[in-house]
Length: 627
View 1 (cartoon, rainbow, N blue to C red):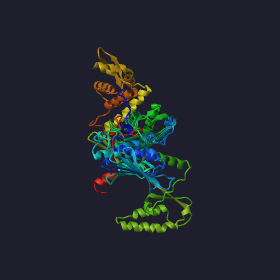
View 2: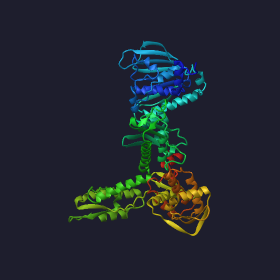
View 3: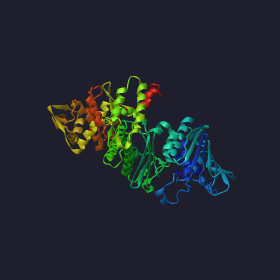
View 4: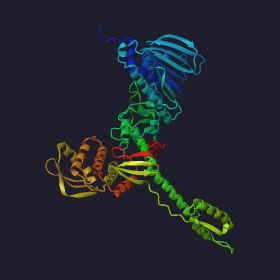
């Protein structure tokens, strides 16, 4: 007799269940997704002891039909698909028909349900995959599933479960992800009688972020809304102020299904380059909508992995969606941009008035300011009355040391003024021309490192090195890609000895060095002679800068030319920029800020470090207990 035998059905079910259910969080995920497929608008999840002893999922979906409830616990029994071709256009969250069967195989289950088209509900009890009882029961439309004693009959799996609070944390993560991808559904998560998560189900993702993460995150996220061809990206991304050193707050979805995908993560990282500090990752909720035919979700039972028919298209749409959202926010919220826009509107209004398109605004002046007015006689009548000018001169001469006397004289003139016939006189105010409004007010410098300016009711402390680094990076990059090579010849060439690996980097990227303004040539074994350097305009130790650039390029991916170029240009700008504690005179500081305000993204250096720190007038007054 051979050694190979067919396993019994019970053993097969337990093995299969291990693929779908590895902990209580897996049960919650599978059953909540079933509730979503049942068109539920309200879903409640309640657990005890980390979900190991008890889980209850309640929804107001369509409910099971009484004839289907027993079949629902069979493996590969599903209402989502009918034939093989349906796998190419899956739109439901579940489709394998394994969830209920897998859960029932390793726990005790009680299901109470009522279909929307039936008058009476049904209650079914299942233990270890076997239906123990089925009966009619009073119920509202929807389904309530209770799970008791997870893995009670699989001790090998049970012993690998974590502490109760750890398992509860995994369940919280699952509920969070599903709630973020389904803002139109109200979710409630209860752990040991305490409500942990409760969302409103308004359909507004911003509201759901507030419900789950609170005001700090809510106030620091901006929308993502981008569409191209047959793909759309929708979501929210956080500003650098709430970035993290891990990806723990990154939530990516495909057609509302939570996934972990390297292509999507890489696209997000690339889009955030220069916007976030190095090794910092943004808070992001990113939902990609695309034709189901172009994606395969049937990769693994957990459905966390997917395959794309064209990964490059997915990369591009995510990259441009995130990048455009960040750049749009920079343009709209930059204080320089706001002031410039206000000045532009004001100038347009003035032009329209001067050209007669808009009526000239009539300014009214209080008579108390009559010392600054001149009455021009347009068509005087031959009457024996004092002129307006003589009255004002008389008033000026009588203004004395006591305020009350001045006010009395003003009242006297007010009484006399109506005696003149208004149509024969017009007022011409003598008012000095206002100075042209500037974008900012220069305050000064502290510690020879930070420039302080004021814009309206906010103060900005600007790191002179980071600001100059951003400015130089933009200038060097523009010259680099325009092939406008600007070199400065050295009176005495610099010789740089390199290792074999460093020499290889230089020789393989000689064009990159030359396009930026370096003039290089080999000078013996592993030695480079620098005869010319980029014409940046500052005294720099070019030998150390040259080696720093090589080191940065060695850290870039060998196949990514764009990454090498970025590191090259960013390092060149960093090494060439003015340093902290380098004393700049007033005009140098103002010139730096004047150039900085022209940039589209002035508030981060090429490496993502902030160039400015904002402090509002309100915050200052609050610290001085004025508010």
